[in-house]
Image (tube, rainbow, N blue to C red):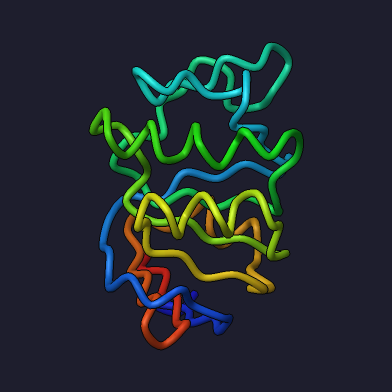
Length: 136
C-alpha cells in the first residue's frame, strides 16, 4: 500500500487541519445525534455511538436531519469539542452551513475510499484548496 492517498473536493476556505481520522459509513444528525457539550455521538444504533468526534477529522457520507443541526455544529465549536475538520461525500446544506458558521475546515464532494480512511493514521485537510491527504 502507498504511504499516502490524496482526494480532491470543494473546500470551504477555513484553512488546514491535521489530525486523526474518525469514520462513519452512516450519515450523521447533529441535532439529537451529537452532544454539543461533549462532542460524543449519542444517537442510539449509530456506528459511532459513544465515540467522541472532538479534535478529530470527521469523515462521513453526508448529514441528515433538521436545519438546527447547523446550530449544534456552532455550539460544538463554542464548547471546544468540534471536529478539527469535516470530509463528506455529498455537500449537505445543514453540514455546509454548520461548518461555515463554526469555521470548521471542510471539504465536500470527496469520493473517498472508506477502507483506506479506516486504515489511515493521520490526515491533512486543506479546505483552501479542497485537498484531503490520508497518511498511512
